[in-house]
Image (cartoon, rainbow, N blue to C red; front, side, top):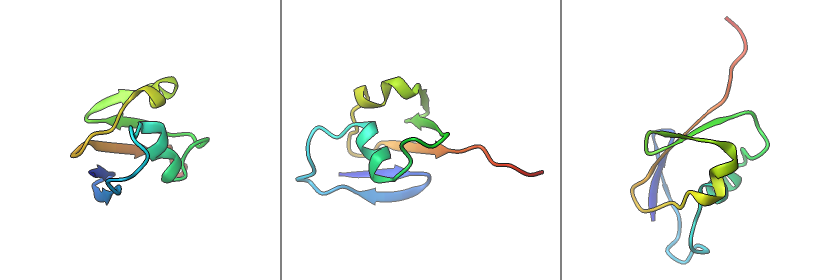
Length: 70
């Protein structure tokens, strides 16, 4: 399965534990517990809904974090 994360293509093996949800993807990207905002196919997803959003081939995920400075 191929998804795009922050503009970069990422492959998940076909035998990856199915079904793959957004929480699983974020855990693999090592961002769980960080202050982030996540969009799935253009829709902002509340943190409490990560496990209920199932990922399909071709999905687009954007992960953003606040930055300090100016």
